Amino acid sequence: MRGKTSVSRLLRCDLRCDPWDIAAGLGLLALLVLVAVTFRDYGISNDEEVQHVYGAKLIDWYRSGFADGSAFTYKNLYLYGGLFDMAAVALAPLLPFDPYETRHLLCALTGVAGIAVVWGLARRLAGPRAGLLAGLLLALCGPWYGGMFNHTKDVPFAVLMMAAVALLARLAGQMPKPRLGTVVGFGAIAGLALGIRVGALLLAGYAVAALAGWVLAGWWLAEGATAARLREAGRGALRLLPALPVAYGLMALFWPWSVLEPLNPLRALADFSHFHYPIRTLLGGTEYWMYEVPRSYLAWYLGIKLPLVLLAAAALGLLTLPVILRRDRPAAEGGTARIVGHGLVALAALFPVAWFTLTHAPGYTAIRHFLFVLPPLAVLGGIGLDRLLGRCGDWRVGVSQRSGRGLSMAVPAGLALALVLGREAAVLESLHPDEYVYFNELVGGVAGAVRNYDVDYWANSLPEAVEDLSEVIAAEEARTHRHRTYSVAVCAEPLAFEKLAPANMRWVSDWTRADFFVAPTQEDCDTLMNGPAVAEVERDGALLAVVKDLRKQDLRNPGEPAETVEVARLRTGRQHRHWW
Image (cartoon, rainbow, N blue to C red; front, side):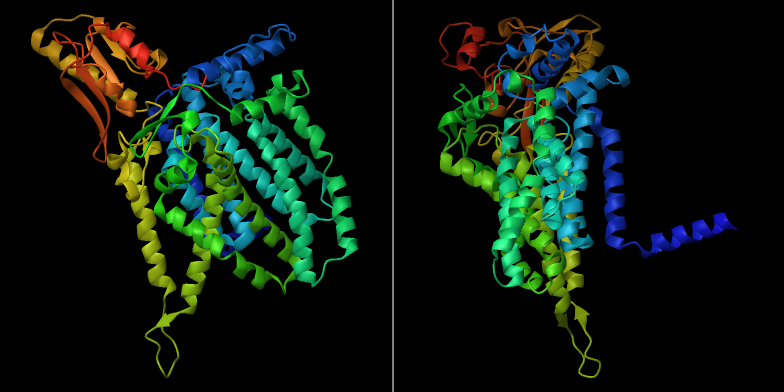
């Protein structure tokens, strides 16, 4: 009887759950299934090998009793923390996958966790429907979903930054006596974020903004600022101090170089602010050195890389902030936390873009290094769409004079939104597994972006190109009954090819001695060698990669001087996209 009672209570609880929450839970579960089914489809990015080596070297530093310091002289990766890389190296022997497949799985699960954080924060600020819409906007954003699988620094960093903002919003609701658990949690998240990238120092500014926002929100809600509230803010700030040693300890654990000298984090920040590496980037068909991009570089890329529905919804969310201030003013209970939370989300979405623009910072590979602004933009978007649907619910058409009833405009508005989001899902499905190359309609999608913008900068189309080449060779050998080993030149990292290539293919560094040439169209790498194309990788009308047959071909481009193609390739510097 007691068991039956428990089950009935559980069922009643489930029935009382908000349908938007149920939908969000089912969506997160579907994402986890999708990740489990597809994480092996993604290629090895150009940076993953060196990042994996860096993670192993950091672990070796600990294993050697701090004697093996090779991690601190390995290229200049020491400017980054190694949290994700160390975790991936540690997990690799425990899972039945290739180490790079393990990296992709771990990164993708982290990305899904980021979607859950966005849902939770938007739900806290504006309700269950806003939470679901915010999660959908981020999940259906190509740069985020595609990046979840191999942007192994950018996505974990973005998730931690969003989690820190969510905790700051919670702390604002607990002021002037924030709970120790929340304070320690914020310190832990901040330390983990610093264990990936020094840019997490932004969180110190966000914390100051949260305190200032709490004071201003109190003045707004209580009709007048008081010295007592300022003193309470000061006491609350002192209660946040336990977060500092927690953050510093975790930063030291996963980024040990940062504590070898007291000023090392600031040195890293200065280096990132003045990157002058010989890396090219494309913007509107014009090629720039990364340190010469125009101030509009980031805003321009955000405007064409993100779905238009996300951009419009985020703008709507910003426009609703004054409405939220007026609505929450009479409701002091919980109003402060909501006001501060909205302000923090807007700050996290806009400040990095404004900082990049005003300081004229270096930029390359589109929005990769600023993926951490996407979660707060999605939260703003969820709030904006929720507000729009709420207003549409107040409008009715076909109102009867007798009953005063009519069709709520929320129904057609909801259907229209569902169609727009469904279209975004269809676009991502058509791009799979190259979702990160997404561009919106302002440039004609991916087809309009190829050769005009940074598109497949990770050479993620390489696995499909190698698979196509294998089929071409198999068909040829079936006709000729001749079997041999073929040399292949690849305009990408050797590891990415060697992990995929069958036994009858071998990578060669001298392109003039290759039988076949595999290259992405990024930076026109496919034009560096002549030969008939025997296979092409396309997505939505965009050519992402080609396979050329170099046998019995003039390997030089028309009009090219009689120097070896290998020398010409090295001179152009187009093979590598590394920042080191």
